[in-house]
Amino acid sequence: MRARTLLSITAAAGAAGIGYATLVERNWFALRRYDIPLLPAGAAPVRILHISDAHLTPGRRRLQSWIRALDELDPHLVVNTGDSIAHHQAVPYFLEALGPLLSRPGVFVFGSNDIHSPRPKNPARYLWRSSSGDHACHAPDLPWEELRDGMTYAGWLDLNNHHGKIVAGGVDIALAGVHDSHMGRDRYEDVAGPANPQADLRIGVMHSPEPRVLDRFAADGYELLLAGHTHGGQLCLPGFGTLVTNCGIDRERAKGLHRYPADGRAWLHVSAGLGTSPWAPARFACRPEATLLTLVPR
Ligand SMILES: [Fe+2]
Image 1 (tube, rainbow, N blue to C red):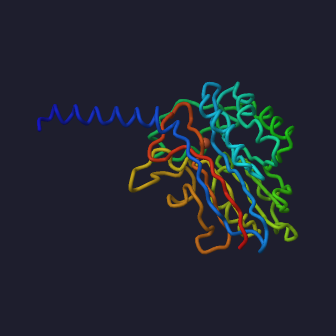
Image 2 (image 1 turned 60 degrees about the horizontal axis):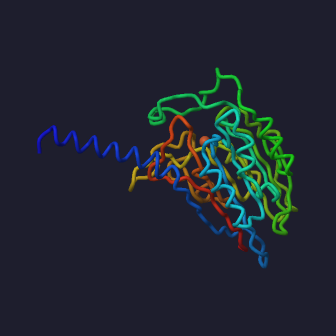
Image 3 (image 1 turned 45 degrees about the vertical axis):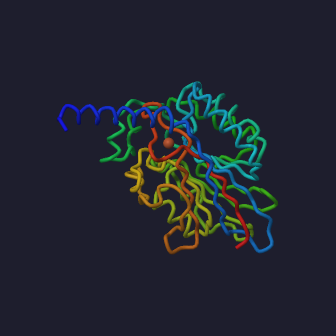
């Protein structure tokens, strides 16, 4: 085969891949489901809807409709692990997308992208470095207070370096969360200490699944740890999976449900997230997702 023909085929395959990743897979939303044996014997199942990393902009109508339709799953609790917005005017669109979900019990933490607007950057740089520190010389400029107030006004618990408790599906749940460790806003000492032993279930919530934070939640007795941030790697290799996690978690636990630590008793669910930065609008071999976690008796 002539070099010119080979070059043409390679260029055509590259263009097709980019078209697929930006136009098809980025909008090919998936619902993942897991059953987790965490409830006392005889308890009725409890459904937790885990959403994360919507990075919503006003123009993403398909994503907004898909989020809104998640209410049909009839979750007892909604957990939002942050990076919800990516535009100065996105808050009303995000709250509208949550729609009926806001009348259900819910909790949230923030990610760095709820605070700082997205900036153009080379997406390939994630292959050799993390985005931690990217916001250090970039003042907070997104309306995170409006986002916080919209969710708390609806009754959702703000778990950014806070404790809380909630009754969902008839189950008493003790919760603790931290603000984003990826940008150094986590203050675990504000929530540190043994998780409430009187509760039926203990959940730790964070944006970035950083091992130093996960270790502390697990040591304090939190049995279910929920995080986002990784986007599952966002651009993955079929047959190999995640290339980078953009934080300290290992590639194997960049998305999905796993034990934490690997031989421990806690469960860690990392959401691959619903969106992308507007400056890196592509997903490959890593569909955007929400997850329905159904807690069942041990
Ligand atoms: Fe994100």
